[in-house]
Length: 43
Image 1 (tube, rainbow, N blue to C red):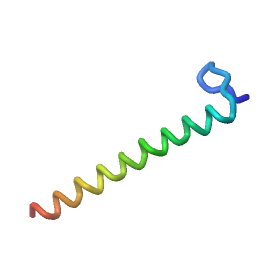
Image 2 (cartoon, one colour; image 1 turned 45 degrees about the horizontal axis):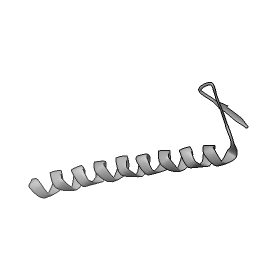
Image 3 (cartoon, rainbow, N blue to C red; image 1 turned 30 degrees about the horizontal axis):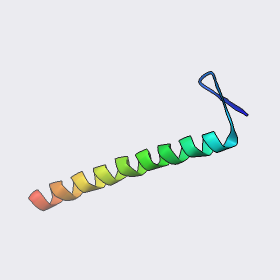
Image 4 (cartoon, helix red, strand yellow; image 1 turned 90 degrees about the vertical axis):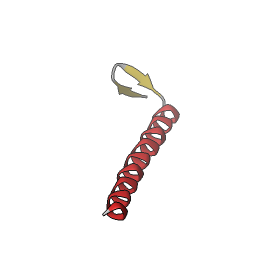
């Protein structure tokens, strides 16, 4: 298992957390792109 912040995680748990992080990352990038588009449109 993997040790992450004091927790012992199985491969399944790690991949699930990784997927959640990826989702958050994609949303973050998407939000930035959306804001950039809005700025471009407003000018």
